[in-house]
Amino acid sequence: MHVAILAGGRGMRLRPYTTALPKPLMPIGGEYAIIDIILQQLRAQGFRRVTLAVGHLSALIRAFVGDGARWGITADYAEEDQPLSTIGPLFNFLDRLPEHFLVMNGDILTDLNYASLLRGHERSGAPLTIASYQRKVKIDFGTLETIGDRLVRFSEKPTLSYGVNMGVYAISGRTLARYPKNTPLGFDQLVLDLLACGDEPRVYDFGGYWVDIGCPDDYEEANRSFEQMRSTLLPTITAAEEVIA
Image (cartoon, rainbow, N blue to C red; front, top):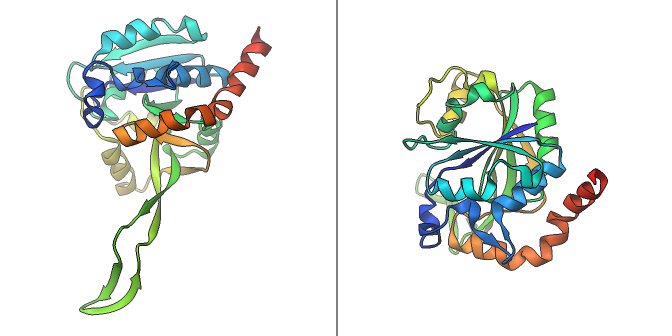
């Protein structure tokens, strides 16, 4: 039960907040850093080891998380000397990871069952399992569908729904073994490489709560909704800690 947390990004879309703080340390509800919530959830679900891929303002993350003892987790680090995108950092510490492991961004707030995602991936035999969330997008214009120059369908300000990558996935070591260390690689390119060779990823549909704090609007939404979602995000943590104690 090992998780790699991608925590090295510069958070350009979240500036000016991220000028002083890396995204995983952004405060939620005036009480927690988002990485605190994530580590509490992981510990409650049975994860015991975490490797944090760090870069931007890494000293602050190291100082906050330390060796992970505060959460009952063993934490270690992989430092990015150069930008390696979203998958590239994993190549440099693949030898520390088991055959099947969880990967997630360090800036999401969700009640996803991470352990269930990983167990399902192990059973599936897929190279990669992507947690998927249905995101609705309101179009502020009337949309036109045409064939040639003829209009065949019109919709007034429709709401479209898309399955989007939540920034949480389970990977098997064999999937990454083909790539050398220090190779910049984005998640998008990994998926395209797998599709090109016929090794199709699996999708894990999730219908609960999910917010990616990568932009100011979503960060503010996470803070607005935290009190309402507190009992969804935190009660299992309290119960698990009581059993352990």
